[in-house]
Amino acid sequence: MMSQLASSRAEPHQVLFVCTANVIETIPTPLLDRMEVIAIAGYITDEKMHIARDYLEKATREACGIKPEQVEVTAAALRELIENYCREAGVRNLQKQIEKIYRKIALQLVRKAISIETSAAASIQPGKLKQYNKPSKKDLIEDVDGSLSFEKSDNDPSSENVDAAATAESKNIANPEQIGETWEEVEMVEVDLSPDQTTRVGEQINSEVNEVIDIGEKAGGDTEVDKVVIDVSNLVDFVGKPVFHADKIYDQTPIGVVMGLAWTALGGSTLYIESTLVEQGEGKGALHITGQLGDVMKESAQIARTVARAILLEKVPENPFVANSKLHLHVPAGATPKDGPSAGCTMITSLLSLAIKRPVRKDLAMIGEVTLTGRILPIGGVKEKTIAARRSGVKMIIFPAANRRDFDELSDNVKEGLDVHFIDDYNQIFELAFGSIDNSDS
Figure 1 (cartoon, one colour):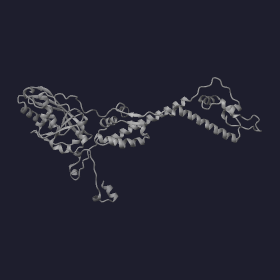
Figure 2 (tube, rainbow, N blue to C red):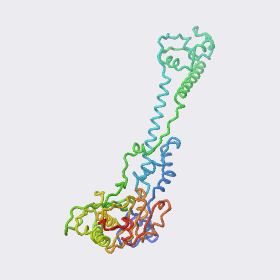
Figure 3 (cartoon, rainbow, N blue to C red):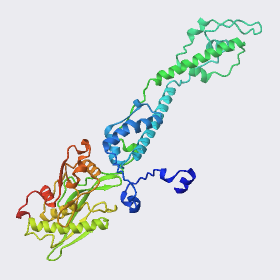
Figure 4 (cartoon, one colour):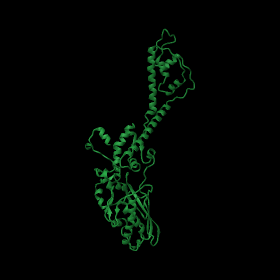
């Protein structure tokens, strides 16, 4: 970098350095301290829809030479493309997928056009005459140009006047069979014509060829190429199988399963926490963790077990489930590394659901770091996580109270239809997830 500055004769203090990164956590701290950070949120689905309609589709269609009336990509297909093929924050991959679609459409249109032209040509191909006599020189001239009248030449006694009216009746140039059969069956016959006659015969031949072309156009030229419609049903034929699948695993979350929210470089996603009982007995309390979790997330799981045990003793003192049970906590998508503290409240809810044998609402998702005393700390990526919740059919979201300002800054179309609760203590989450409980739940 400095060598490039030296060669350009630019003073370093006159240069503005702009750096970009998808994940700010990987930037070295000394470098980050010297930067002014401008966070740019990724595009939501509605924004990607507008970008695709107004810019990407138009540019790609023109580049492929396709007219607007020849193709239609439905809104449902475009949304399917965005949500299940292109979940990145930007639109680079979306542009690639749209280009792939239009290239295949262009190929289809070319093949259809060739097929129509071939059918038109086949429709004017004649059958052979059963009987055909080889024409004389006079008949050939008359058949080539019935409208011409050749004067008898002194040098060619075989030439004589040709009556146009006599030959016009026997010739039907609009009948492709006669034209084609003449071309197929007549052998080469040499005819001596003057230069002027040659020109006039050539003009007549051109006229006849044009009439043949007109016949072909009438046979196939009026056939319009069908519009290519891209819908959800045939989208896979153009871009293959979906790269991403629905985040929602359960139609009804079973006991011990709670939906959380996560943030990735591609945006937000749902994250299920599953808990199950391994064995139970006096003094056997333990927690086994799987799902390729990082150190921070493993610590959050241990904190969640401690908080869940304390809350259970407070709500149902007669229930020693957490203290005397060996539990297994798992986070699906085991091949994907996961880390961070924001799944704390989700883990606690999963363990408590198992302890009181009561499932949570199927349309509930929650996020938030939890302390040992049950306080809920703020998280990041509110916009992306809200979008992920909407995509999975979530109706109720639980956010930390400190993230209220972040949520208020979201556009109305992102917040529409969501019942959002901002909490600062886990006891509030317990009431929302399970309601009131009595000793029978123990």
